[in-house]
Image 1 (cartoon, rainbow, N blue to C red):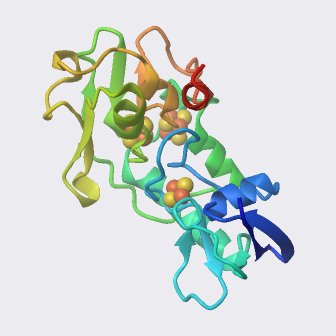
Image 2 (image 1 turned 135 degrees about the horizontal axis):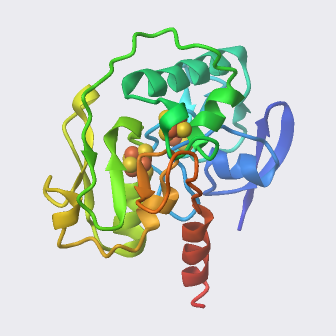
Length: 235
Ligand code: SF4
Ligand code: SF4
Ligand code: FES
């Protein structure tokens, strides 16, 4: 595969054509914050945490969905980017009801980890405190919309990897919600195979098995990445 020259955070690099900026960064040990990205499923640029600056382009662009181009000069850690990462993180917390102390994911949550990473010691935006539904109709799992950050990992893993297409999205803005089948209780789904892939890739305490209680949730997001890698190799 042909390689092209790019500069990331002042490091001159040779990157394979067709790579996203996120892939190029990962291959070269440059950390980029992500939330909606998950190895093995398609990127959609939903969370906007991975925004980078590219010289000559006024807009900030998501590293997960932007391909590298020859001679790009990319910055991933400027004060401007850090400011936006902190705002994005605060908005995740302000939009739904994240009370970590009573959450199954407390201590094992990618969103909680993100809060620590960006140094979020308080939230500067008004909390919306929505009356979000908790769907306990599935015999094995719970969907708690109070903890959902709309990363859509569940939607993509269900359609792209499991092929079940149970999850979808309804509404827009602050009314946006993940839905099962055609907005029916998860337990009534005729498409869900109870494979647990969505539960394992969800970065927060929004999807969890009924067998766990507060602070006990352990997820295995890599299970999906490994499965996809094996399929590619026809193992
Ligand atoms: S999902 Fe994560 S951030 Fe939200 S309440 Fe649970 S532990 Fe806290
Ligand atoms: S339920 Fe979990 S995986 Fe699905 S969109 Fe919400 S936070 Fe993301
Ligand atoms: S990881 Fe790129 S937008 Fe979410």
